[in-house]
Image (tube, rainbow, N blue to C red):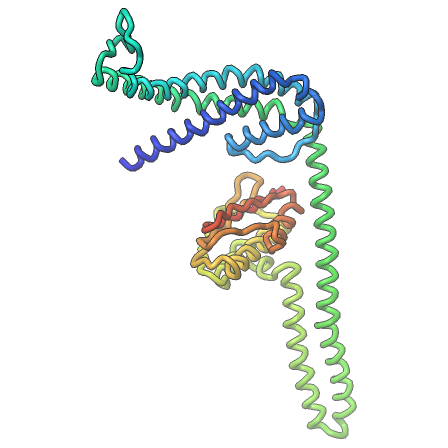
Length: 384
């Protein structure tokens, strides 16, 4: 029963949103027709078309990215908007207007002047409250069913038409893609340079300094052994301890370049180990991945690592989950938590680094994190 009520409520909401979209389309189509000479100028045609494009994308639930300006395409859209928006919006106006009129007639039939012959509605004579309420209720339900069945498909059809007409050409899409790849490659080169400088600094200030100290200590020990064997032996023991510390530091640096656990256990084992070390209870679900390139494994591993670290530091979550699947040539890693939400990659957090890593392999990162949670991060990486 609850499912039926929920389905009816969802359909009513969808019909309402579609009706609002179509009524807005009727209004803007009328404005387009009246103000056509002004809207044909480049300064107005582009923002007017872009406004409709974003409305259409919002109705269909499709994100719309930036597009290059093209006056010819925008002018074609102006004609299309008038040709499709006026009839589609008129249909919605008639349907919703008659719904409202039915309610008015149902309660105010007595205020209308009598007619000869008597008023008939759906073949029934309206001369009292009983026929007025019964017949108008039937008409209202009929119009509501028509709105539920007709308005959403009509609105989606108009929105698809809008996106199709205003969509960039294949050449423009290719140019935009090349520009995006150029930008991401530049970001990756900058990040790579910064990473190399960090590694050099870690090795120079940490491991190299320890090795120099060890070499000096061993040299002193070699000179001390003939005269003072006990002092020389103590120096050797200190050098050995420092050697172990240097090895620990060196492993730490290597782990940031390519985690040994990936080389030893692969992505599946590495993520399992990572879940065991996570700051919150984490469930791992990994499908059949097949052969995954090393670069993709590394990006997926570091993405999950950074996401789980953010969850432990900021989300106040009680549990998290990692779901990794592969569909064709696309590897998908989805990280979710039940925390407070509000995650935003634009704040310069580690999430921005995840996005840059994914973009370097022509992949994508999507974040859904409404206030109050839950947070869902999806990283998609091509495996070819």
